[in-house]
Length: 263
Image 1 (cartoon, rainbow, N blue to C red):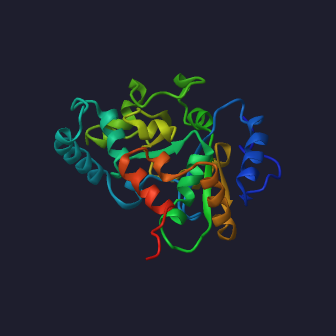
Image 2 (tube, rainbow, N blue to C red):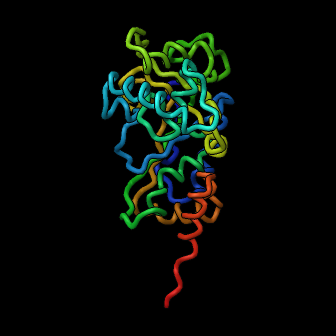
Image 3 (tube, one colour):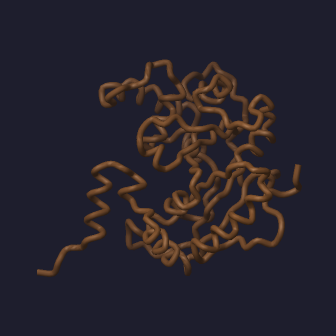
C-alpha cells in the first residue's frame, strides 16, 4: 500500500476549473485505476463527518428514522416497505434529514458546485472552501472489508446491514467503521448528481483519522478565487436547475438568471 494517497508536490489549492482537472488527470495514474469520489464543503474548516454525529445522538437518529417512516409513506408516491432500512435511510438523507450517511459524487464539478453554491444563492462574502477527494476502494480495504474486492457494494447489499440497522434499532452492535457504498437511486436527483455514500458507524471524522492521507485529500478554493471558479462552473452548465432537476429549482434558477426589468 502506498505511503500517501496524494504523493508529490501537487498544489493543494486551485484558482480555476482547469487547474483542478489538471490535478485530477495527474492523479488518475496513481489511484490504481480506482474511480475517485468528491465532496464539496462551503467552509474548509468543516470536518468530514455526517451531521448526525456532529449535532445529535444515536437515540436522536433512531427517533428521526421512526418518525420519518411513520409519516412519510402517505407523502411518497411509491414508499419502500417498512423493513427496507437501506431505502428509508437513503430517502431520509435525500430529503435533508440528519443521518449516518454522507453524500459524495462521482463528478468533481458537481461536488465543486456544492462547495460554492452559496455564491449563487446569497450575497455572503466569499470564504475558503474545500473539495474533498476520496478513494472509496482504498477506504474499504483499510476498513478490512475483504469481501468487497474491487467493487463498491450497494447500500442495499447484506454486508451493509450492520452499518444501516443501528439507525433504526438500539439492539444492534455498532461496528465502529466507515464503508463506501453506491447509492440507491431513489429519484432523478441522485442520478443527476452521480450520488454515492459513505456510511459512518464511527463517530470520528475521516479527516481526523491518523491514516486519512491514504484515502482522502483536500483541495482548497481560496476566498479570493471563489467567485471566478463559481463563474466558470456556471459557464460550464453547472446550475441549480440541473443539479436539482425539479420544477421548483428550475423556476428559481430562471428567476435568478433573468432579473427584473427596471420600471
